[in-house]
Image 1 (tube, rainbow over the protein chains, first blue to last red):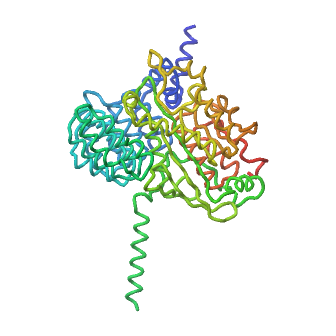
Image 2: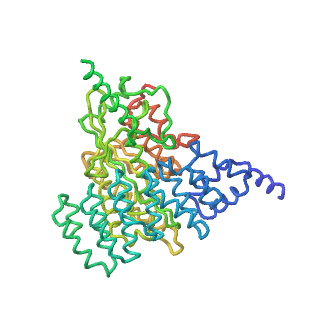
Image 3: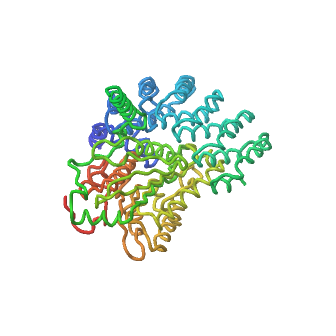
Length: 226
Length: 308
């Protein structure tokens, strides 16, 4: 019996890290926990994960970094954010948030939203700053609302909604007002819903903004504006 | 005489440099690009079943392709990923096309963030427009927050409505999302059990998304010419439902669990295949990401054995 267990154990260790990584998603909690245990037992895993960044296994490597909370890889990950076209690396950085890493990650993301980095990466950064209720300069939010990328504009609005709800400050009505004149129409829709969801203390001010969308050229926007 | 000539060359050179260096003209990231066999075999080079399939697909001057991401929660974790996956696909579609690749070179409509267009040469050599709608279902990346967000209700209704309407009128419909263990395509936050896991028993019993999909396909005279379901085990769970008035619809489905990045690659492989009019073997290779065996399969699109 012991022999069989030893053989099974060595077989599990012999499996490639990607085999275990595939079991981190879409499986039961027990399967996921077994996969995490097996991954932790792999020697030189960090080197393998970093090497995978040059291959199609990059997404699996990012899943492993998140699942194992490999905070020691944060410096490596942060150097790759400028080429993170899918936003997946930025998400992995975000998944490493803890008391110990918060300051560093917030600083990286504050710099990132002001950069010309890939849109999906900046989108994740705005979302994360919003979730953490980290206030950035209003001018920066307004600038993001005029970004070339729809995704960045959308994320800046999502951020504004979260900050308005968390801080209850009237200054967050300024980006919402600005967004009611933006194209494409999906941005105006998001802004209207953010106004509908404002906290009670901002409701009256918010309702005044809705006057700006009553005659919108898009029917869907007019409907939401009611 | 020399000065205008030099000025012209300078202007042309500047334009060329601008076109080559503009940010949106970067090639698509390799990591999501499908692999495809070289040389690529397309309907422009072949007659027979391959050409026939694309002549039917490009019968009109405009091909309507609708890509809908379902609500991709990761319960029991709060993370929801479809908004980010759509962002990655949008970036990919708007990037500059490398040789032989076609899920790229699209232009986004400035007034509609979901709409992308691209002009291609049809199987008869005449220009066609590919209109691609790219829809997603979640308002944000946090399931708890989405449940408090009025925009989420709008997004869910919109995504489901676009999906069902597309099943009745678009040429190609591609879904990338959860299968909900047979419950069907889903565009809203999941029903949860007390332990925070999705309520799979409820989905398996009621099959809400599957019923709506079947009803939409059964009630139309103009079903899609191809439906792709990039969701786990979609071949077994939904394959039989991909029919309209008793006639099966050409489909791309997955026989097994599907890793999210492979689903994205296979989806882009399908878009590239259709826009590039790739013949069967090239098409099949382009939708086989991450597979030792070809677990994502194309069926019924090429009516007869087509040239390899």
